Each structure stands twice: as C-alpha cells, then as structure tokens.
Amino acid sequence: MTWSDTSSAGVFGQETYFFLSYAHSVPLSDAARPDTDYWVSRFFHQLADAVRQRANRLGQIEAGFFDGQVSPGADLRRTLTDALSLAHVFVPLYSPNYFRNAWALGERDSFRSRLARLAAGRAERHVLPVLWMPLPSWGDRPETVQALELMRDPDDRADYADNGLRALCKLSAYRPQYQSLLGALADRIVTVTENEPLARSRAATLTTSPVPDGPGTALVVTTLTADRERWRPYGDQHQLAVADYVAATAERLGLPTRVVELAEARDRAPNSPTVVLVDAGVGVDAARAALDGLPPWVVPLVIAADHARGEPTPEEIAGTLQGARFPRVLPVRTIDEFERCAPLLVTEARKQFLRHGPVDPPEGPHEPKPSLGPAGSSDVRRGKAER
Image (tube, rainbow, N blue to C red; front, side, top):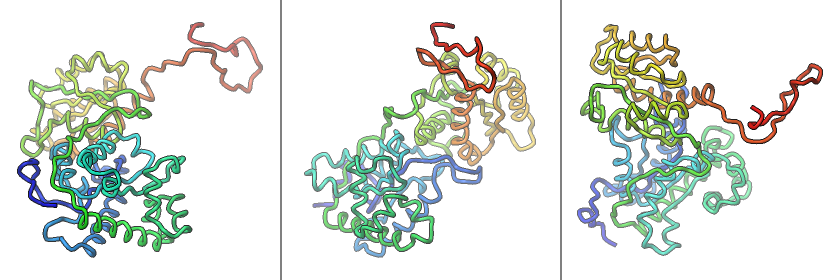
C-alpha cells in the first residue's frame, strides 16, 4: 500500500484517522453554533484525544475530522467531499434522524464510494457505526448490530442499546461504560488505519437524495435582490450564495429543498414552506410590492450586509413585511448573524407552513370530533365527496 496517489486522485490535504458523521439538530439558542450539536462536538474531541494516545502516525495523519471544524462561509459540499476523500475510517452516529437525513446518508454514500473495489469484509472494517440514540427495532439493522458489538460486556451493552452513546456521554452514572466504548472505538480506528490504510482516492461528490420516509414537501428558497447572479452579499467571506447556504442548512437538517427564482417561488409557495431572502438595498416599497400576494406562512429575512448599525432601512422593510402579516424575523447584517439565523429560519418556515398551510384531508369518512353535548345533525361523518 502506498500513500502517493494524491495528484492522480485530485485530493489535497492531510489524511485523517476518522471522519465523524451525524444528523444535525436545530440549536436551542441563538448563541449556539448553527451547525453542530454540543454533545457531538464533545464526543468528537474526546474520541480524537483517545486516537492520538494510541496512534503511531500522528506526524502524517490527523486524528479526526467533523464538520464543526469547517470555517464559516466555506463551501460545505466541496469541503466535506475533500475530507471524506482523506479519511481512513467513517464513524456514523446512528439515530432515528440519521436514517431520515439526506445529508448524513449522502456522507455515508460518498465515503462508501471509495470502498467499492475492496472485498466486502475489508470494506466493512472501514465503517465503524456508533449507536448515538436508541433506534426502534434496532436489531433489524445490521449496521446497528455492528455498533453494539463494540461493547463486549453484556450488561454494558444493554445500557448502550437502551440509552445510546449520547446519554452515556452526558450522564456521570454511565461514565465507566462510556470510557470503555470510547477506548474500544479508538483502538479499532487506529488498528484499521495503520494496518489496512486506504489509498488516497477521490470520494464521490456528496449529494443528497430524497429519503423515502422523510418530509415530503420541499422547502422553497428564493431571493429578492437586484443582483441577477447568485446573490453573495458577503463576498469573499462566503463561498456560497446566501440562498445556496440556506438550502444546504435545510438539507443538513433533513429537509428536501429547492432554490428557485422569485417568479417560480410564487407558483410553489401556496403548497410549500418558503423562505425569501430580501436584499435591504431594494428599499421598502419594492420589497412590499414584490412580496405582495405571497401566502402568510412565507418567512422573509432581510439581509443588510451593506447597511451600518442604526441605518433604519432594514428595520423599516422588516416592519413593513410584518405589517403585511408575514412572520417577524429581525434583519441580519454580519455573516455571523446570518449563519446563526439560517437553521432557525428553515425550521420557522416549516413550522409556519404546517400551522397555516393548506390541509388536504384524505378521501373517505371522517370520525367526528369528540363532543360533550348531545348528538345531533352536526355529528354526521364527512368525507371529501360531501363537501
């Protein structure tokens, strides 16, 4: 095995012992980093430390990678594809959301593309799943059975299966079990990497496909701006257009997403959760006129990257849109404010759509709502055909 395939594979950077993959969750406060879970971050750093204690090739190979290390504004899809191309072991944190999250499954598929030419037994050793949160019918998934094999003691394994590693990480009562599993996982990562290293090879570009049992209605993201190209108000600070960044955030949270022009968004909004990113530079009247007629569950965000604090136009636009009965979202100016807002914006759009969007009841008879009053003519069962 050689380590010299860099130029032919088109992969640049330092290899890692492992790549940590997980399903993203929504931050609980505006102060939280928008794309990481606190306990995932804590587990990653502890696992990386355990790998360093055992590793013999730290000068050549970094301990690990997870997306909490990505610089703000980076092109996540490209950055993560590069990282997946340089990792020797893939560590997915399995949870109910993982198998419904197109982004997380896309990371797994991307890494597996590098294993296609390996014998099945050897390929499996490069994927070391962790049961992060309990799964319904976990015994039916071979990947989860593999995760449980890390814990050798039957009693400890029962605690792990019932609670998941996240609980073991959080609760001091499970500290011995957590340390045991952390050590076993680090041992496996180092053994596989140093005894059966993967040659540098380009992983398939990370893509996201609809998940069969995931949310069915795609989030629509559009922009209102004078810029005809993909709008990038933060210039060199952000490799992605702001609409693409919001779409990537939504996908990482498990929501299928479409980035469309405003005219198409008008057609889709009556049946879709929708986010409109508004350039404060268009002015109050233009913003109000452009969004007039959109459903009230559409969530607008005014981006004022070129407006200083105290300059009133962004707040005036936001106030005007709120007066038109759109959900209230405060304007953002800096890149940090925008990135903190993105996951909350996505979930607010979906919440507003579920609360106020169209309801299409299924065909057939419907049970009447329970009532404490006497039965009467209002209790007749209704279906679509009777409306």
